[in-house]
Image 1 (cartoon, rainbow over the protein chains, first blue to last red):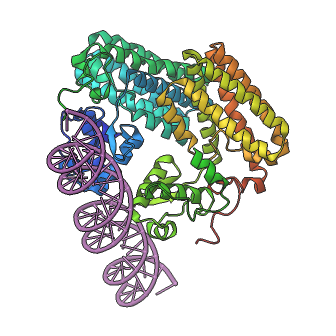
Image 2: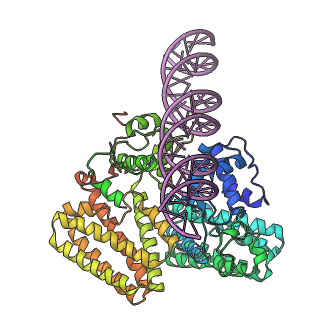
Length: 269
Length: 269
DNA sequence: CACCCGGAGTCTGTATGCAATAGAAGAGGA
DNA sequence: TCCTCTTCTATTGCATACAGACTCCGGGTG
């Protein structure tokens, strides 16, 4: 999670992923995810092992393990003859992933409302919400980064209040898909003033969610969390119409564009 | 899926998993899953590689890949010093997994209702439901096996009608957990007459689900699917009180029993 | 001219050797 | 008797070598 944030900040890195005490496997995993999300390989590209070995500087054994992990995460797909290829995501896939995140977060918030949150958790939620309010009203780029951090902490907090490791694992896997993360589009929102008011709405959702948990209103918590996730869908639609912003989002190249006309790739590697 | 059915029929095997054209990796994976679900290793046991190598007859490389896959599936957990251990499931974990399956299947049926199912799909659903009715009313053991097969086909069918590969993947992962499968307890139902009427109720759910999809009643489809999954929870509670039936279910030994008193394992391998 | 066959190159799957590390056991001292 | 330090062993992580399969290209033949 923290690693994902760091990776998102790097502009084009992936040459070396600050390897110190980490194993070769996780190093390969992080570097590979970075490369994939940076758009280095177009969808459908076969991820041959030997070129990656010399590019990432690790041996085949940890590389293979990293490939398998990324396949489980959904960024790669298994080829029938063996090996892996870069997966392509349709806009429908992303819609469903966002909807699914809403469903799972809705369940998490329903659990939190049914099972009750501690006073400390509620207090921290309120504090985070207030600080997100501040960040939204400041309207400068740095406070958007603050917002991302506060937002992910907020989401982690109600996941904690749900008290369900099983749900936690399921949500982790959905969020690992590109564009399904709660803060996937906040970067874009920092640059697109037309979507600024969406943050105001999102923060209103946050307040409603806190109320619902506090008042043990499970149905309200669930449906509001679903609606909350759907702001990401609105952001997606806005971003999809602003190609120059879209291109800068990690993983943009994995999206199958509706009518790009580029069925035959002109520059095949 | 078919492999899982075959594996479930073997009594204690796992010596060899009918290896013909399959790779060593999937062979190790199937054998290992079989061993784990058979209760060969108590929860917390470290899955050392070398003993498994000589037991499964594969080399360390495919074995390691199989271990990683099972960790992604949730049957194993990563030890901090490296290596894997058998995971233990609390009753709460199983409750949440069942509830989560209900949530995801509810979403699948909502999608099916919103997006519409084809006439062939509805016809096949109706036929499957009718045949499940027959199987339930026959009340012999063989027809319970028929029921399992029809039921899994039924579930696959509405997943197909949902038209969402993302949802499909998420559901596959939840179902891979022991006891979260739609037909996890049907075997037990074949032996416990007290839970026979649950099958009648479940089949009534099936009919309601078909109606809801046909009439595009998305909310009804979703809530009914959730309720449908909760019959598994009732079955779990019945089975948990019949230890001799529980012991025969695959994966039973991975459940942490509430007050078994056996904190210290007497025979620690 | 077209089709088939053969060979070379490349890729993945698998096995095994090596090194580093963590844990346990034993010995020595307080 | 207990604590600590040292040493040894067992286990994992990593690298590399080997084998089988698949593909692609070229040449030969019908």
